[in-house]
Image (cartoon, rainbow, N blue to C red; front, side, top):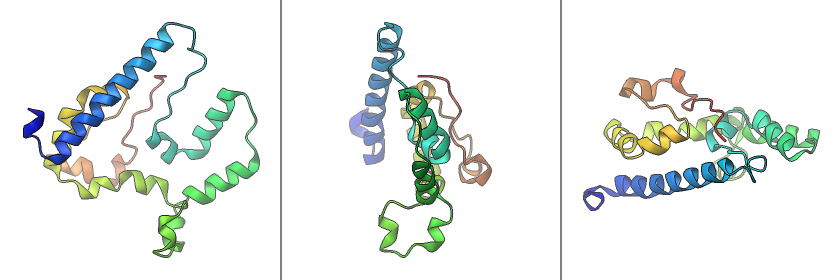
Length: 154
């Protein structure tokens, strides 16, 4: 079946297979107890939507104080103001509207391809706490931008 998939489907299959393997490995390590207090999962989307909160969580986890300069840099680097203030050349740098960047794919992939990826990747989507889009309208809706579910999974 994988060979008959288009390139997006084949890539989704490969990536999602690795995600399942990595997620299950981490879960097994945590359940063994030895490393349970030495591991946290940080999803890119959570960081992009809440960079200061997630960074603070990481700093707390490793037991060090976050320098106010880090907080300031995060605000500047991930702010919604960045899109309007950047030239084309600068847009390739490190300052972007992170929330917009993580949702850009939603306007680029067709609904059929999104459905295909959601079907192929159903297991890692569930394991990692991602929500699925139920319709093309849902996919394009600005209200569904936090397209990840909060999860306590480590």
